[in-house]
Length: 263
Image: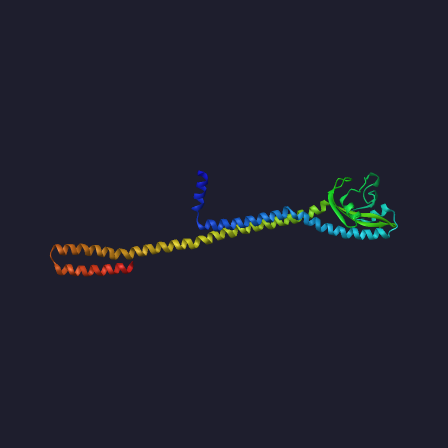
């Protein structure tokens, strides 16, 4: 393919400075790609994981409070999350909602099939992320086994994902700003590297030019002398002047030795 051959030829004729700077740019590009992936991908997952741990600690404390309170179940659910944006739900072992801090329990369907409830029924803390069917808000749910007035129940706490998203967005924006600064600094370093790499080459060209000029000047003198002496020897030999011929021949040998030394 002609176009491929043309590209290959163009690349092969590039200077070493081009390849040094190109390699640097490729390394920076790979680094930036990995950074962007880390910002856009696992960041939210890390935030959710940390918040899940925090909610697990909160719901376990709430479960202890629930086991000791004598309040009505609905009142207890509201008091557990008072002055917060959390939502508390107390669920019977058959999935029936006994109390909820923000919703009328008569409007809530059976929760037995919820993943976090299933984990709590199995005796361990469970969590899930999904959109609430009751208020349509994406939430993080955490549930643990608990007891209320001597009966086993499920204690569940949920938090809107909007708060977690804002945390992730703030961290992502900060990361993108730092990434932009990093790219700018990398571009400046690449430019300085390219300019610095050009200086030794320019200096080498100057040295080469000076050497050629000096060598040419030094070689011109003995070459010109040899040509003159050659003409003089020819003229002297035509005139039959043996002594003059010998003298010019000796000087010719001297100039030849000088030329040999220079070479």
